[in-house]
Length: 575
Image 1 (cartoon, rainbow, N blue to C red):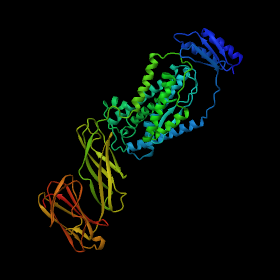
Image 2 (spheres, helix red, strand yellow; image 1 turned 180 degrees about the horizontal axis):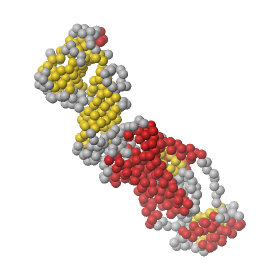
Image 3 (spheres, rainbow, N blue to C red; image 1 turned 180 degrees about the vertical axis):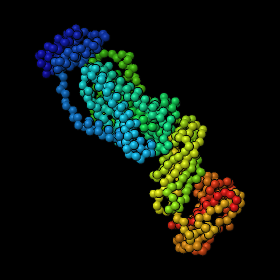
Image 4 (cartoon, rainbow, N blue to C red; image 1 turned 120 degrees about the horizontal axis):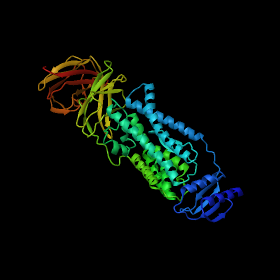
């Protein structure tokens, strides 16, 4: 209820700035009908607000033309519990640091904990927080300039992907005008966009000039989508394989988070911009946005976190006290920029898919290891870049096994090939047997997978090739030679054997038997006998072979069910 002194102060203030035509008083508020000012003076209304604020009053325009001004007591500020906001801030900080640490560790392949902590703090955590704090600091300055109180925002952690989903405004001050709403939300969006783009460009240049030798992180192109700004503005000038340097990835996260804030939804920055531009009609955009977020949450559950917080604060954005003033060109331009930021940063791959294509050639995708004779094996492969931009492929092996990729260069230019040597640490393979792996080479959205197989055996003296184990022999291309696989000691189940030929890519040979002649061209491992063979103790199995193409090493191994084996290592030369 208005006190008499407040009513008097209200009448004096309104009559000072406007010509009053009529007035109505219902004890809780006073409504003044004033002469319709054209155009409506925003400075006069702000001066009125400052004058009556000292008496505990506030005013708002009831009509779009400003001809009706309502004055009523200020609502008492309800103390908001700060605890939950601080807890969310801490959770977001932890999520960002954890995600940054994991990304740096995977990107550089470094196992030193302190090194990873330092580099994740410098090149991911600090840039991400620089983006977030810069946006909030610009809001703080705008509120101070408008004589309003800054409220600590709600930080939204993202435990799944990026560390954060951004911030939600908790400004409980009433905005004096549409222009103040646009400044409060539009300028921070532009600030966040510019700083994010700087980090993204700087990190992308670093990625190209010094790509990692063996990154085991996936390209962001294969995850939640690439910002349009990277595809259209950056990709064309700075060719990248999509495996972003941590600094570039921080910029990418900044663009995505900034675009979240630009959603025309409730008290998000975009929601405040939409309310300033459309008034009460902005609720329609809020409904559309929340529906889109819920649908996106099916593919990326972190969207649900954003939806929950938005719903808690309401879908309807704020309205200014002064609804009568018109938006100028500058204000409309800021709104346009805000929604452009939404489209640029949020929409995944709408205009341009990076031209990243390559193919993998592997000379030998099978390896034989004699248990106890070494802790590593090597696979050699070549990658040819069929796309138009420079690439630096990343490798992943599943199931996980320690490996190191080595090459003479770090990047592959368009149309060029690069040889890689992948050294597998097999010290963890203790049991004899066959180990299957999938090796994936990826660049951007493009990925190729090849299958690898490691056969671990034990050399056993009861079996041999030509009475030797292992047998090392030179053979000539185009000349038939014979190998005798001999079982001199195994009985029972141990006398059933598999005989395999392991050669290089497209190596061609002829196998002669009593019943058939087969000219076989193969990749990797091939079985020489038709199924398993059973050899009684003291018996042998003859292999008549002829190499048809040149080769470096041709390995033949015969082993039983317990992987007790004999090995023949053949080299090209005069036999």
